[in-house]
Structure formats: C-alpha cells, structure tokens
Length: 486
Image (cartoon, rainbow, N blue to C red; front, side, top):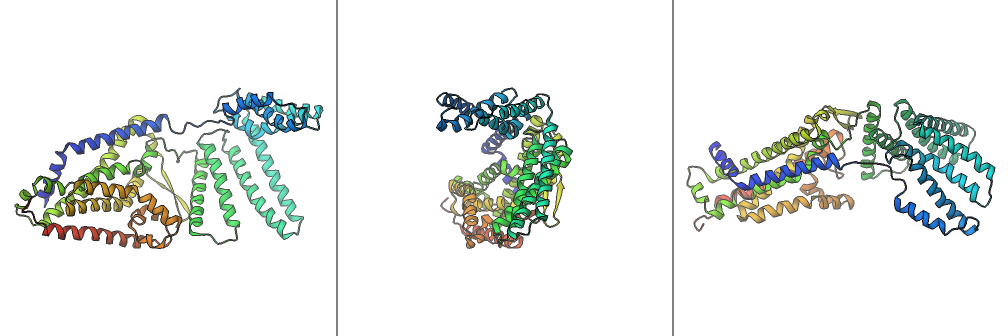
C-alpha cells in the first residue's frame, strides 16, 4: 500500500498543473496581504461631502433669509457651510471633526436660527456665539477631555433625573418607559465613564470603534431583555452574537488590545478558511477529479492493474493520496501566509490571542492563534473531505475529469445560497442536506448552529451517510469496470 501511495504522490508532483496552482495561490496570498496592508480600513471622518458643500453654496445664493418660505432652508444650508468651514481647520481623521459634528453643530444651528429665523434675537445669538468660540478654543487646544467630562456629567445627571422621576410617579405605563430610559441612560453613562477612565481620545481608532460597538450591542441586549415577546431561533442567535460582540468590545476597551484587527498576520490567519478556503478546494478537487479518470483516458490504468494489488487496494491508495494532498495544501498555504504575512506585517501580532465567547461558561476565552487555526482546520475538514470524495467518485464512475472538477466547484460556490434559503425560509427538510452540517465550527464554544434542530451528533451522522453514499458505489463500480477496450 505504501508503495502505491508513494507512486501516486510522485505522479502528482511530476505534473506542472500542481505547481501552477501553487504559484497562483502564492500570488493571491501576496496580493491579499498587500491589499490588507495598504488599502484596508483607511477610515476618516467625512461628515459633509465636497459635493454637498458645493451644492449648499449654490443653493444658499438663491435663497432670501428675509423671505419666510426660504428661511428654514437658508438656516440649514448656512449651518452646513459654517460647520464645513470649522472642519476645514483640521485633518479628516482629527478627533475635533467628531466633536464638531456631534456637539458644536447644534450650537451653530441655534445661533443661525436666532440670526435668520422668524424670531430674530441678536443678543441671544451673540451669547451662543460666545459658547461656540469657547468650544472652538478647546478644540484648537486639543482639550478633548473637556468634552469627555461634559459627556460624563450629562450622562450622570440624566440617570439621576430619571431615577428621581421614577420615585415620583405611580403611572405603570410611565414607569415601564422610565425603566427603559434608565437602562439606556446607564449604558451611555458606562460609555462616558470608559472614555474618561480609559483615556480614550475621540477619533476613529480601534478603541473608539470598540466603544461604539459596546454601546450599540448593549442597546440591543437591553432591548431584547426588556421585550416580553418570545424570541425566534434567529433572534436568539442575534442575541448571542450581540452578547459576544459586547464582551469582546469590553475586553478591547479594558485591555487596550485590538483583538478585532483584520489587517495583520494574526487577523488573516484567524480568518484563514474564509480567505483561502477556495484555493484549498480548487487544489484538492483538481487532484481528486483527475487521479482516476486520467488513468483511463491515457490508458495507463492497464499498467496499474497488472501489478500484484487488488483493485480495492489500488483505489484506496488513490483516495488516501487525495487525503494526504488535503493536508499538504492546507499546510502549504498556511506556510505561504506565514512567510508573506510575516514579511509584510511582521510577526508581532501573533502574540495577541483570539477571543471567543464560550456560551457554556458565559465567559470570554483566550486562544493562541495557532491553536485556534488548528481547531478551525479540524472543524472545516469534513466539508473539504466530502467535496474531495465527490470529485473522486465522479472521476472514478464517469472517468471524465472536467465533470469531476466542475460539479464539486459549482456545488461549493452554491453552498451559501442553499444554506441561506434553508435559514431564511426555515425549510426543515434541508437540514438533512450536507452543506448545513459539514461546518462543525458552528458548534464551537456552545454556539447555536445555523438551523434549529442541528446537533454535532446529527451533523456527524449526516456527513458519514453522504460519505458512504459516495464512496461505496465508487469502489463497487471501479471493481467491476471493464478495461478491455481502453
């Protein structure tokens, strides 16, 4: 058997096609790493687009602030132009842009309302203008903590005000509304405290992203917790996702570590099968789809069958060779990513753990990058093996390489559509279809599977059944094949 496998591996590595595939894969690895390095996540504030500012300039020239029908639009466009002029003093990624948009704009709009509105009040406009000038000075002096402390103070006052209101009313409907408002206000208070205590300067960096995500997911969790309606299966999954995202965001805020970073070596490896899974499938299917059919097409199957080995042993050696090539392709592409990614990004990011929320223990779990990659590889193996088996079966039964390669690749590309249909329309019988079952990563860390009713044992049985349906007829047909006319 070992000699047969060795012979099959030798034949594979004598083919130019395997090296072309590996070179194409290497080129893609280099390209994807360069894209992540130089083009990914270049975020900056763009509150008003240049085209909108130009439109406002042209529109305001045709408006008369003294004409009642034009007043409202005039104030709106004047505010846009005034805010835009203030923003031009800073770079697009400066923290001041965010504060101008979230805080200063309302003052500018109020000032312009007193200057040009129906009830003009120049004295009030001047008072507001003084406040705008004071805020402008703080922006110029890089005094972001002033705004953070103001935000914290306002949040504390809001919570206190709502709690006082709660004690002074007996209206049940209003009490329910106050409880909801208090829950939201406390989330805002947590966010404000995090900004001050963790020294998070306003901006668009990963800390601000985590802070915003923590706030958003907390809102969703609170809303669902306060809901009296029974959740659907998909809503329960969304709830779990929000819970996981909130805890990961909290970890980032408290530890100042960007565990969500995708554009580095660790980020790419953590998402390895989404990035390079197609290339693994292509390599494996190309080998499995030709390993038998080429022997028939070239007539070399006769030379193979005259050797002192049974047909079953010959076919088994070819299938084992395919399995070896699965391992080879995965290891090879991981090696490519390590070399290319290490050269482009460096290896420092590999010290940052992968975070997973364990729903069995309700705790975040830190996992080494390579351990996580190993776990993901094991969980993805059933899908790769089943596609390879399908290609191998078609190659053996029909001895047609194009068919044996094309059908599994088309099936792989259509997986997302089948799964989406099953989930979206809750088509129960599709849970017996292999594509909903072959990704065992859905069961990791107590996670909810793609569809209600799926379990690891059920998915394992389904995968085994599909494997046997493909592999048993393959051996039977190969054993009975007539090779006299080849």
